[in-house]
Image (tube, rainbow, N blue to C red; front, side):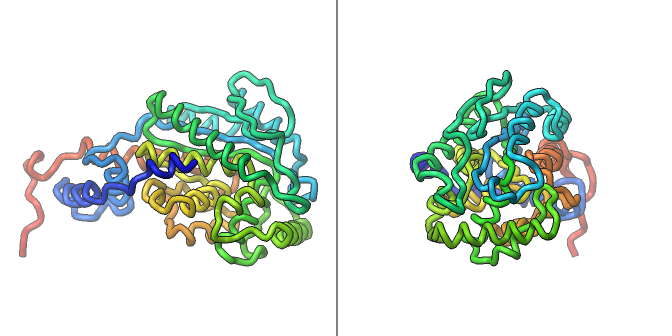
Amino acid sequence: MHAIVDHIQSVDLNAGEETCRYLDTLTKPPGSLGGLEELAIQLSAIAGELKPNVTPPAVIVFAADHGVAAEGVSAFPQEVTAQMVANFANGGAAINVFARQINAFVEIVDVGVASTLTLPGVTSAKVRHGTANMVDEDAMHPAEAIEAINVGVAAVERAKRAGAKCIIVGEMGIANTTASSAILAVLTGETVASVVGAGTGIAPQQQAHKVAVIERAIAARNADPQAPLEVLAKLGGLEIAAMTGAYLAAAAQRLPAIVDGFIATVAALTACRLCPALRGYLMFGHRSQEPGHDVALKALEAKPLLDMGMRLGEGSGAALAYPLLQAAAAMMAEMATFTDAGVSDKATL
């Protein structure tokens, strides 16, 4: 993990400034394309060039189980994780549909599903068969957290070799909103109640139980908020660790990464605590209905591209936001300047 962090450089602010100036030469009033221009500036800073390319994208979905599911914190039983992985492999999940829409490479990675999977189209990189119940013991050993981070790194490196120009990361894991809420509460100092939502659709009484379970786990694990790897190992999930690694690898490869919803943003926050220079490589696809997502976005000073009341995960919101990056890149590559088009620029008063 330390090797990948050492390879991450801050985005090229000079390239971003050059793009900012170039945008004002295009046939439009300055700033009239708003957030799309902000995206173009960020993409240029990431790539270090005036006309970045974000096509094709890669969608990588990490799947793992959580021991804390035994506490009854989810509306669905743990076996749904493996069942949904099979659905991903068969191309029937929402993320498969959206990935086809944007012509993305797709890889499904088993980093810690509790059952043994032998599914065609699923990459087996299992670190262990699910995490331990974080109420009773650390979710995983620090070495296992690092191994899972490295699974995410390797997946992005495979996508890069396949030609990917943009990374979208998704997840599947029953009870992973519980682990994400625990991580977020510790890293930000916010109360558990303020970051816990309905997850897969639990009732208010079960949500109160979920808060109590997380509070017990946080007290028992006593993780140091200033040690993100420790927090991840004690309270996190294998897929969350893999996502953390994927964001680190995207930055090391100078690839833009679109962050999905609540769980993905907690992984992104963890990655940024490990390497603050990573932040400039992240775009945020959408605002989730999970209340903790606003807390995580605020911690990262992030403004999501879409707000559609979604809370599915899988990378779905990030995939839906991807065409905005395409549009920003196309604007830079194809839009005429005032000089090229023979159009008079704004008069100087």
